[in-house]
Amino acid sequence: MINPNKAFNIDDYKEIALRRLPYIIIPFVLVLVGAVLYAFLAPKTYEAKTLILVTSQRVPEGFVKTTITSKITERLQSIEQEITSRTSLEQIIRDNNLYPKQTKSQPMEEVVAMVRKNIKVEIARGQGGEAGGYFTLHYASADPRTAAVVTNKLADLFIEGNLRIREQQAKGTTDFLKDELGAAKGKLEEQDKLISDFKRKHTGELPEQRDTNLQMLTQLQQIYQRTGESLRSAQDRKLIIQKQLSDLEFPVTSAAADRGQQQTSSRSSSASSTARSGGVQEPQLYELKNQLADLKTKYTDKHPDIVRIKRKIQEMESNKDLDFRNNPRYRELSSQTEAVNLEIRRFQDEEARLKGEIEKYRARIERTGQREQDMSSLTREYQSTKESYDTLLKKSQEAAQAENLERRQKGEQFRVIDAASIPEKPVKPNRERVLLFGLLIGLGSGLGLAFVREQMDRSFRDPEDVEVSLGIKILASIPRIVEKADRAA
Image 1: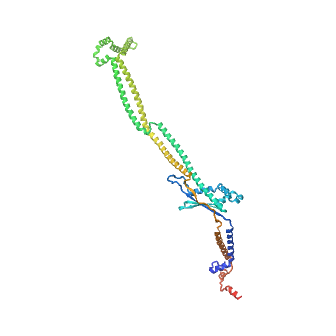
Image 2: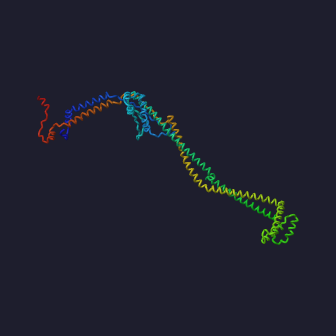
Image 3: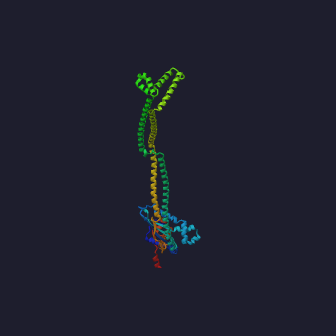
């Protein structure tokens, strides 16, 4: 085209179409013939489909809460990956004798890829783009019966896969919680044993025994005080008995001590009277001892007078002891003395024992604070483990119920609503669509080719073309007079 800026009208377009009619007709006819041939001669593909409904759990979740938290989309993808795996598709190919020619001539991987390409899963979408309560399963094949059979087989596999996956997930949850529960139980028993050992080791020092220890300490102190009073009373009685024995042993000496030196002159007469009455010669013994004391101030112990007086005192004391042992009053006081000594030793032993008990309970009370801190730490850890164990126990029971629910097929399930039937019309090729597209593409190809040819044409079609091409002004032009020329002829 020489003048691209030229304005065209409807007559110009008609002229171009008539002039370039072969360029329009030939591509149009070729494309349309090709479309017709493809529509009627291309291999037919039949597609069967089945509608699968996702039914909700039959038992209300208020009674049994499911442990399956995965979404339908995730499970469908997992099931689809499992079903479209090479192992599953090879089994389907062998059972239904799919692609027999290709199976013999091509590797199995390529045949599996062909089958996988013909499987399609469409998930219904609800509000917000979430998966709806159903999905559609499609399978395409050259044989309509095979398409229906394989589609129904795939639907069965999807249903079985869903049940298996849900049961596996429920069982996996139950097994995991059982393991965690066992570990928590072992830890709880270990901590319970630590608390028991702690209580057994520190019996009497535990916080709950503080009041008892205080009461026992108060009682022991009271008993200790009464025992001390009883001990002092026994010691006083012993002093009284010893005084009585001393008075019995030295009656004149005691009397002289009470009367002073006024009765010194009467000792010899009293002693003679006591000796005649069969008593012991206490004044003589007393006088000899005084003489011995005076001599010791002057002489040594080897002096004859000192030796003689010692021997005489010894003889008199021997006679005195013999007389006292035969005296009933002396024996009575001696028995009382022995009894009091036993009582004193008993009170002393009891006092020592009570003192040890008091110290023991005081030490217990002092250590109660530390034991309370240790016990509080053990109790907190035990309580935390106990709460964790109770939580795991509850979850384990719920998981066991959920697993039982899935095993009895009372949970969420896939159910076929519309089973796949043998398709009556092929989905490929779609003759109406192919012919329509062939018509449009042929017409577009012809017009496009005519447009390209017109753009490449450098011929002069009107005076404007001459002016644009040669750059000269056209003064006049003679139009073509085709009809008049024909009439003249």
